[in-house]
Length: 67
Image (cartoon, rainbow, N blue to C red; front, side, top):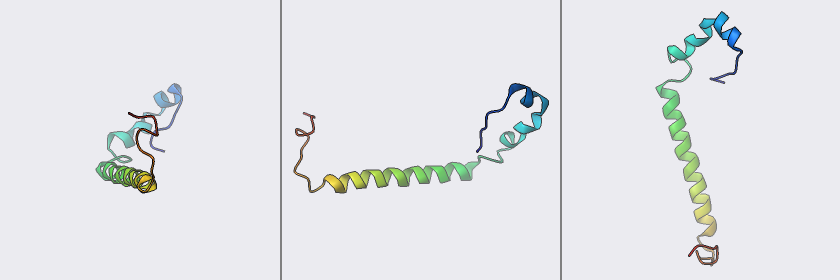
């Protein structure tokens, strides 16, 4: 969405295609922090799903090949 492939000739003929990136119109601080919050949420979900799945399990590190 923000970065698209284009032919070199097209980019040289139409330099205005670069303007949105230069003025931070597409990706700004709001987008950055929204992505950081989303990454934190996704990592928490993955961690707690794994934790709660194996919390009551009788398997230990030795059973899974770790020493």
